[in-house]
Amino acid sequence: MSAERPTAPTPEASIGGVWQIALGELDIKMGIKILEESVEKVVATMPVEGNRQSFGLLHGGASLAVGEAVGSWAAVKHASTMGKSAVGVDVSATHHKGARSGLITITATPISLGRRVASHQVVIENEAGERLCTLRITNLMIDIRT
Image 1 (cartoon, helix red, strand yellow):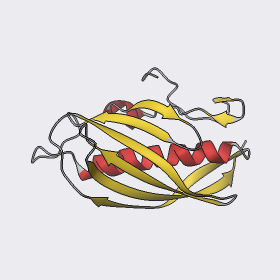
Image 2 (cartoon, helix red, strand yellow):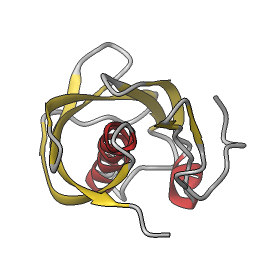
Image 3 (cartoon, rainbow, N blue to C red):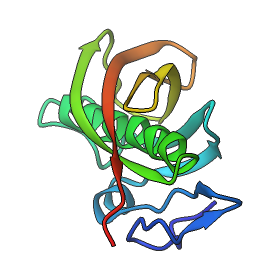
Image 4 (cartoon, one colour):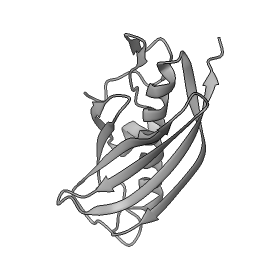
């Protein structure tokens, strides 16, 4: 899957009733690529290069931005199975280890998939499989405005 996806996620961008991830402007600038997407798991990658802070490490804000994106995409995929969408209401993160280069992998898996609220764990790992950051994101299921 490439960065040539539509930039505006819409309910119309679905196949078989499940919404398909559409990269936004920030996602494209950060170099995010989608590897896998389903209600059960969303996996993406992002380069550390271009997403570092002034000390040469992966920026914590970049980790939160990509983690929130991947976790929200997972929630919207779940919501779309009910004809709904999702909006984030809470995100928290713990940074475990830094990274200076390479490609990170971001994986969102459900903690709880409800009719009104969905919570996901998002794990960010380096190329060696070492955990860099753990996020928890909670999304509210909402009706799609027409």
